[in-house]
Length: 105
Image 1 (spheres, rainbow, N blue to C red):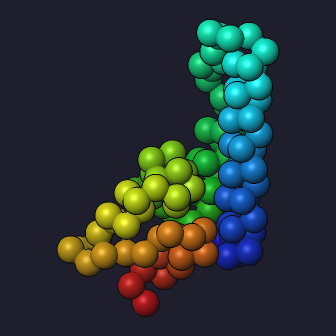
Image 2: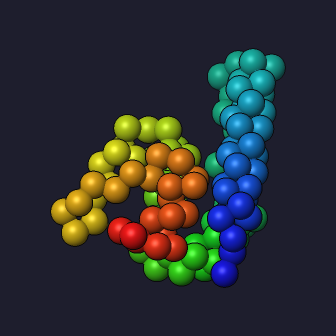
């Protein structure tokens, strides 16, 4: 199983890549007004997320949700996570790991 440090580092690297992608898209829009970056199928993103989910046995796809829907834990939606009618704090990569590896401990 992946360690907490490895998991957190991996999520931080994915966030870093996401920031790079957003900056690239912004600068392309500045250079070519009215243009947009083509939407493409990013196999490496999908593989990275899938491997992280496998590494913590995340069958429910919380990692995908945390990255894409909750925007790396930044959106308020992250506070809406409830399991068995109990609120779950997954606002940081560390807390997400704890929830996935040792839920409700």
